[in-house]
Image (cartoon, rainbow, N blue to C red; front, side, top):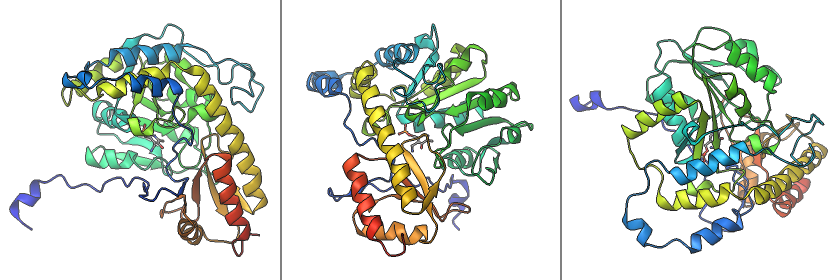
Length: 379
Ligand code: PMP
């Protein structure tokens, strides 16, 4: 080993899902939205001039931050079912904060950027940060890179987060809700219980998939100043390629995040992302329409895949995490890929016999079912 190699920060990077070069692929591997962004985004794009690229963007991305604050403040309408809720609970899916101000929003280049800033800003204890053993596989990568100690809390046999595993002393808590890649949703009562037991550290709830059937815990910010809720435009707003994510928290925590961001790179959000994200945030009607379509396709997928001998948790996300009673997941993954149907396979302990299938359009899902119906050993 050369002497200078001793001083290199060596990391094992996160491996993102494959983005195939072929165009004829049924792409169900990275939880993108199969529908295009709001028509208002297309309209705003046509109005963007190259002149706006000459100058630096607004480092505060104020226009986008204000649109997000407004969006998070407007409660959802329609019946519980129309809001994507399985129960008839009148409050389900309506959760919104009253009086949320732009000072409570932090935006970044996708929620990955926001989460990385959160790890850097808030997880600075000698005590371990807690997260589930089966969860978003970027958490341990950031922790390793930033030399943050962490401890994985095993999901139970049914792949559920167990609230009391998070009662122990720690340097912070983070988990997605719904969890990824399982899709399992935690009730607000369990989330509040975890926060209540962790008031001396920062608790981060990653709500990348919350719009597909869950209730956001943003309302809990009224009670807990150590909570950060992270969301993204990549899934329910069809804008993964634009890279827009955000955190909602108390003014104080957002202030600390901004201090770290400005010590790193003032201009994380480019001008085009600011303008197009603002247009998307203002189109609630289109957002409701597409997320309802995805929820309906997902519910149908649960029936179809169960008929074909798959089992899975009751996902409330835009994907299903499935295992088959007789065909090994690794084999099926390869066969599907050969057929031009891409899904995600994680070769990791406890989940190496599962496939994560993103919910596509009805037509894309039909292609998947048609292939599976004829696959040897499926039925
Ligand atoms: N959190 C979770 C749980 C995710 O699955 C993803 C998507 N890979 C992200 C955050 C990051 O998404 P993005 O950076 O596109 O907002």
